[in-house]
Image (cartoon, rainbow, N blue to C red; front, side, top):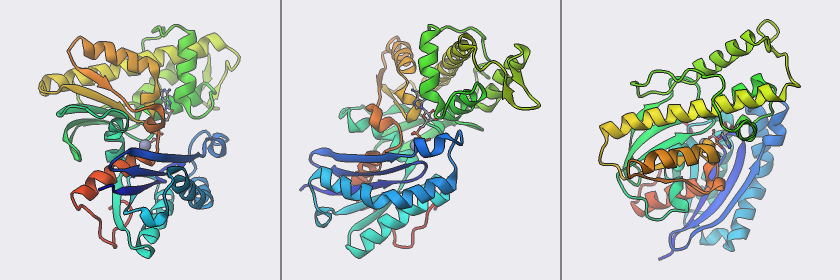
Length: 341
Ligand code: KG4
Ligand code: ZN
């Protein structure tokens, strides 16, 4: 049997659709990224996100079917992100998917976006052993999970304030770098040799939960001390000092990488049976963090696996993948499912 699942994702600023085949894996993974639309605001404006989703959703779903070489009639399951996310953005994909499933009499499943990320490494790594740890680091979420099977995971740690990607984005904004901050920070850090110039605070080593908002404040105060930031006008005063930007970026990247290592070390003490760690979410695009984690884990005989870059940032293939294993177990959603439930 070959089950075809259509995945739809609109929880933030990517309009995405994908087709997953239970026999052949990902057949298509289409996406419209609103980075250009959102760049002028330095972050995601919910109304712009939802209006853009409305404009794009039909075309993206059509092109996901076309690229996959399948017709809507051949689709058995429609899997749509139902939580968490920006409500007005979620609603677009969710209502589109639910209506499509209802009219065409497909099976319908609401998917937790975080479960999508948590299993996204399976899209290009077939044999990831259980139990394993999963470090999810994106613009909206940062968490460490203990994963025992498909859909079976326990949260060991989560962020109590900002997410890691959010820290990259907000600190990038402090020093007048464009949105999204992560890739910009990585490029500048590379120029500065990935060295730790300013020794930003790492937080409490013996605590599981992540906290990144203090880091942003620490960077801001450090810039004030360097006469590079004015608190009153919230202005970066040295926009042409490339060396300073590179050193901030480099110190920040090293600091966040160290925080990840600290939490993983704690988790490994508590869960010595894990054989692997998956590193997922937009921040997992970062080659420096990948290399550092790989070295750190290989000393402990634990393998590091991560999704291909197109599956790290928000995408619908990961939503369709979760939809596929849920369909296998007949875990469908009721028609009265709402977003954020
Ligand atoms: O998973 P994602 O697309 O969206 C959410 O679900 O939030 O992640 C986007 C986040 C942004 O905060 C962005 O700055 C970060 O991922 N990001 C990176 C890199 N590429 C994207 N962070 C660090 N290094 C990167 N190369
Ligand atoms: Zn995400």
